[in-house]
Image (tube, rainbow, N blue to C red; front, side, top):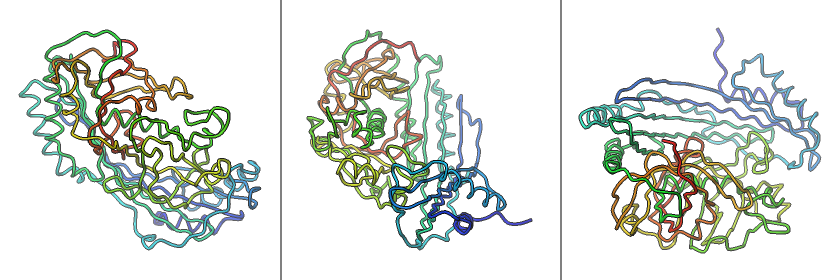
Length: 463
């Protein structure tokens, strides 16, 4: 029985088979392990390995080049030639690509021949005992825990017909724990994303759940309205990630987003926030490191397969309140006349005059709300980036600087861009993960924000 092909062998064989003018081959090797629990007991665990191969063929040259993309989750050596031919045929059928650019040159990385990174159930050996202790405390203290933790290692190999050979290994750990009172009437959530799950502190997460569930002993019904509201870093992350995902320079140039200038062009260079906020991405920032090169498995308004290999560096999307960059391909940069600033897989928000933590923000609220997280976030108006969504797993009443009870859930209507001008206080920026988008974009650093007039548009019966 023949041995399975290595990722490097797949890349080289596809390039050997190529009859097109250019070719890019990406092989993603994913290794993941997970634990799931409910009712204070482990329920399932699993280990999975997966491979996806993407072949991008280009036909023609310069602005007349066409591209064809074919991706499959499993290939054998006999599949490779028809696989490559399919990509080449797709390029022929598609005609000239709007985003066509010359493929980038490059060299082989020193770790090109290293094996893919792997994870296994042993990744949890340091936190599993702590989870067991939390389950015992939950049973003794009439608290029920549900949750999921995953460790994923994605290793990407890229080879091009122009000589570039690149390998990137991206480990990611992600945990979410929901705690409920014994009667299941109240709930709270905590979550965290890390590179190594050994860095998770279950005792700290469980203590925060315990504190929040204790706040729910007093239930208060409140109507819809504008409330002085403290948003934790997790909620700020979900809002800012949505704002980032809408930063396509091409869409802004075409007048379709909040970053579009009325009439024509983008708002780059315009003050869009009254507060000294800086929204940034940096593939080298400690704790949130991500691939330092652009990797695109398909073209869209925000990325181009022709840009595979573009080097990434710290980019400030908003600098001291001014929109300073948008997500650019080489093609959109030509259209807008702005620098090439591709998307980066992390995001941070800094506030110039921030300080303290979330408890410090709560201590300044005379009467308002403290949220746990946001959920089911959807876009209402792209021109203002008005979003709607629900609160979840704990909304708390704050009176005279102290949490005094749990409040019903709400539907909210807010724009993250508007919030950047309206918040009154910010905490220090910390690593966090969004409740809704954290599975797709886990590497974020955000402050908590206090917004004096957060719009809770209606009461929600969601629980």
